[in-house]
Image 1: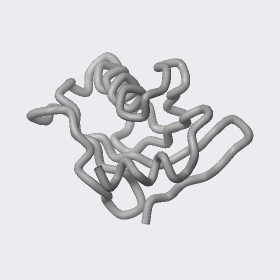
Image 2: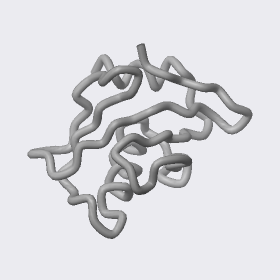
Image 3: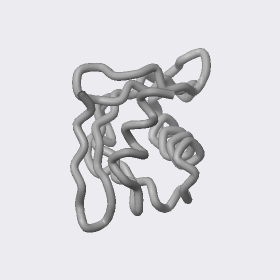
Image 4: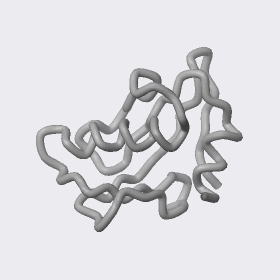
Length: 95
């Protein structure tokens, strides 16, 4: 089950990022985190930037509404999406 925490700003969830994938996609859950494959390499913040861009597009929110709050240098991250609902985040794992 996906770990999700509601805050006064929005929703925080865990994600496991796999850089250098063949395409940008959400592949389901890994333990309690959303597993996301990205084409960007994990250098100079490229994968983090692509992660934010990809999630903003997937959730139909502005890029400024998506923020990596923990794990900038790690594959496992906690991501805040301002104005989102837990249902909207959970729906990503089923798409």
